[in-house]
Image (cartoon, rainbow, N blue to C red; front, side, top):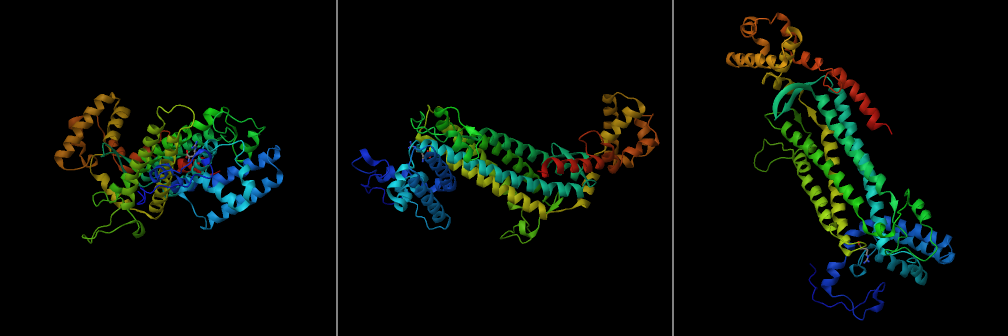
Length: 471
Ligand code: ARG
């Protein structure tokens, strides 16, 4: 909170202050201003203004000379902001008025013509759509980079065995490659969700003006095209008042954040001494200030946690929008911070996961040893009883349970039970049963579509390359 809040600010806004005798109080200014965060829209704002200006000139709505001065002025403003020479002022409220008032300083009177046939309402809706669209494109590239790392490891580890878990108990042997391709698929759907959101958001609000459209002979198709939108939005009230595109972005982002959090959660587990499946590089590990032996996976823990922020952002905007009457309400100024925060968090999380995994070393020996406990080929044994002896699966399940109990009593694995022990439970069992009790035999047998057999995984990695990395 600013310390000079009590001071009355008597300067009225040069942009909308015509009917006001006094300027806003300091508190009013503080709650009203958004420049501290919406300055991030400057490039999109200037892009939108340039497109609008060219359209006004081409439709004869403003003189060509003025249009040219405005375009030159806008380029200068852009340059000043890019160079860090621009002074953002909170008295100018937001990015739109900051740009426009600087434009007026640069080009004089002509600047006042830029706002013909538009309003900050369609302007801000346009800016934020453009910003979210850029953000989606950046996230898509980053996710593709993460998938590239995962697919690379999956190829190297198509035949590396590890326990697959249910209830976090060793369940059946799988391959590491298969596990990494599961993550790859999750991220693929995240990219799909973001792409869906992008497709739907790609319509232009610009020219809807305050809410009702305009009496000037504008060409909204022209500005839509110039800004890379597929079309102008069909309804001016809707154009200025909905933020469903931001909600969709945050929804897709939330699912993505949950996925990243689950992956990160596994990395944290895999880095424990108990699992020791994974060793992060020095550059992605942190030490403890008191316990010298520690190598902590802080980045993974933070990725695991940041889902909270992203889901919080979705929740924030959902609640902001709920119950809002059409059309624009200043409430909607609260849309930006959650969108920016979620986008920043996601970008950082993806970068951290990519960096961590690119440099991580998998401890394949540990993964294999972890398979020695837990009778992970019990399902293979039950399947053998069904396939070879023709037992109904439920019966085979029961027999296998008894064999697991015997092995437990003997303190050995299923593969080390004698044939005699086996036959005392089910007399029909023959020597052939041992052919399915090995770990490698188990994974190699899982050849059903989408299964974990190394040959499947190799094929799946090639297909994943085609589906996700070639475009
Ligand atoms: N800063 C505002 C926002 O983010 C821009 C639109 C202001 N419109 C208005 N009618 N006051 O929503």
